[in-house]
Length: 283
Image (cartoon, rainbow, N blue to C red; front, side, top):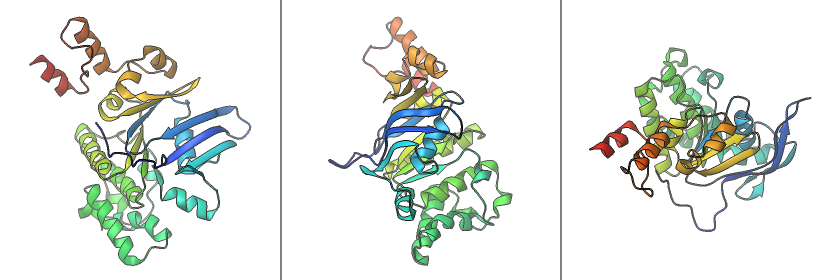
């Protein structure tokens, strides 16, 4: 899966340079980290519990400030004053795992409008952004629905719509498919594909290696030695890295290895990412 082409000479939208972070009176969670989100990519962020995924996402979105090192937007260091954080939050938006930690307004439309209103945008612009975000998440019909009457999947979509209304270049999602049924997962992945087609770079933190293999272009593995980033299929075939990250081998990678061993798949051919792709290889 490929996204929009990167503009020649344009800096990567967000990057951490030599960043270290520790919580109060605790050991380093991340130390000397260099991490770049490349424009137009679908990036999966994988690691065991406690590996630093949440910390990394909050550093990228400005929710945490590095103890040392810098956060850059378009190649320029972020300043943690009002102006600098406003610039950051119109570039990067984080949607947390539990939508109930993010939703607070009485209705869907009011919640989605909160960010644009805080930017001081005129009412017509706010209405336009809210309408676009609701349509993008396929919840336009819920605009007047009280948030406490939404299903879990609808609350997830509303939380994402609130971030999308800020028109960020980078959208970071923490376990966005957690708690969704299979149909809800498919609908959400379709929505993310549409957002990417519109130019949004999407970063997804997940424990699901099979989802990462299916969905992402690049994968970042958080290990005790730091972060290793590379093309998804090749990275998730590295059993040594997976072991260090506390993750298992994706079934698609295992199936591809078996097919190649039996001469049913060329060494240079891409392996299956979904059951449907595996079935097509068997036809």
